[in-house]
Length: 581
Image 1 (tube, rainbow, N blue to C red):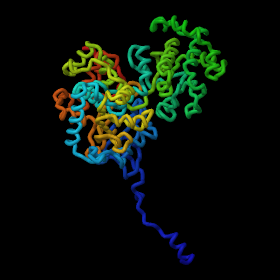
Image 2 (spheres, rainbow, N blue to C red):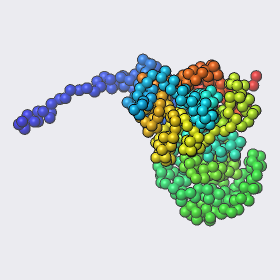
Image 3 (cartoon, rainbow, N blue to C red):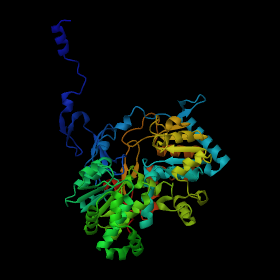
Image 4 (cartoon, rainbow, N blue to C red):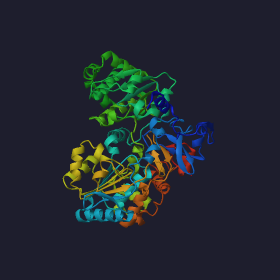
């Protein structure tokens, strides 16, 4: 080929297969969306709380012919104020993933997973679990769940497994990340109730982030910090120089595992300086004198030596905490999953209490959740406790739950479940022989993957229920149940600030995949306990039952009439009790 011919070939106009110019022109859109390309002009929108993290933003999903085609942040929602992070912008992408589970899979005689009908899958599920339970008793089967399905599904799973099927054990992966904060809140306040609102980000004079990197992990929360007009001092306590540490006014790069010594030293210095709020202490706390005596062993000098931060710098921080009008403490997994997580959370709570920084704007000792519905799991999943933190071991609590839900009280377990790690250990020693795992991938996330795979071999039967059929855990299951994901079902999430928000179905689940809620209904039918759950006809019906369970509890939301009420009010933070008659 000559040089001229080569040049002509290089310059040849290729066939165009992209969008036409007229499709890219931005035109005025309805539904308050501004100007958007003609090709994705929606004919309707629906608001839905995001399913990624514990922030709980609301997204306006754009629909064409009833199918989701685009989304944007909901401007009127009090969490994100129209903003969305990169994860939120991509919320629709997983729904079209090519590795979605689309049909039940059952391991055949040759050891391979093969597609089966829902009828066959249910028959296998019931036969195997019933055989294990009848032969070995209620402690021989367990479930492990998540913080990423809607509250109504969490409640249904726990009630079905423990009350319908007769299992004793079941826990969520939320215990792995939140148990320390929950324990600290219960011991300090008597209930698991994070005492803050996101508005506090904007109203604090001093914000202290401990083991938290909201710039990356919770971007919308960080944007709320950036809306603070009070020129706040932002202090980050973290051994690593994270993105949040780089953006803060002060970074304390403490030595690993020196957190507790640091906080006790700061508390001791605040007492020494006389910067405590004695009026608040007298009115709202007890045993402060004992705590003050305890602090006598923790000087600022000792804290400086252990943490690697100078005495002068720690003195400055102590004075900021003690003299600040509105001081807030924020932490995530850097505290919760540390080796002294409960004591660290208690130390932060005590700093807030002794300086009167609880219960007023811009204050609080505030644990931020990771998963989108960790808070829902903590309150309503029938795992660590009965709903609203009632106790399995309390006859009065069991009777109350049985009466509200119309369950025979004798079917409610009288003993606590094993914790997540104890369930794994019980499988290892042969005590638990059947496991049902819902919306969590322990084959990847468990601290010792090799041990988990070895332990799995000790199970007689292993079921994985997930929206993906190729996870590390699904690949070693005996039965895989394909589940719908976010955007393919209705329900509610409860975010870090206790706000209940609605998530909506905007697309049909692929293939034969069903919502977790409908899978539970199917199991109840095949197990023969559907009559127990006749009132559990839809997610919103279950929401009404949970509201009744919340009556008179710290998490009371009996003032919420239903999903429409939540939509109209931008979600609702509990407590919101019904008005007195």
